[in-house]
Image (tube, rainbow, N blue to C red; front, side, top):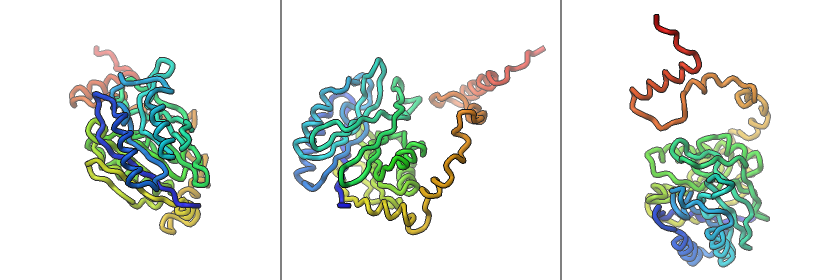
Length: 304
């Protein structure tokens, strides 16, 4: 298999106006400096920012302009995501465009950041696609990575690289960097976790190899991150083990069906006891909500 070059673009994102022209300029500059790049990935909600009023139907102007850029530079393009209007609902959707300008697939975020990503509907379809003569790629978005089932499913579908547009501007970015490394090692795949800046996040994008090692970690400034990968590293890691040690995918394969918590009739009493999925409140208010939740499970006895 031949090497393949992917570039992440970590750029400033506005929440008050379109970032479309800035994205196009970034692609032009990147391809002028690094003409050997074959795929470009932007951050989550890079096109119009994190406000749902910008939602648009697909196909729309954003996709069409990105298709033109893919054709112009003969590149694969994952231009982050935008809010999509579909059947009266709003989804956080990323498009994958090939060098001919064709929409190869779309992916809607499966785990919106509830209870903060209000009004956004969860997607239900996993997304993998093939780059001919290179390998298989999976797509996930931001909070999806906090659920190992998502990346494990993509891996079991054959993904060797997970492209992961992100929008994180909160104090848990350090945790996400750890998750990115762990995800790469556990699934023995490449991870391109591309964050934005300003309204698009706090930067610190990260690229990890199939042994969990960091290939590059950005700072909190605008950066272009061109990385050449080789799928043979994925194949060797999966067949011989991470650093020639653990072989987690084989072990997982040999224990399929042993995870009873995922069965339809599983008892989730403990999970139900955690209370509703709401924004954290002050301790006294939280205690009241906890009591109300417990009363629903076992009503309080009347006071005599």
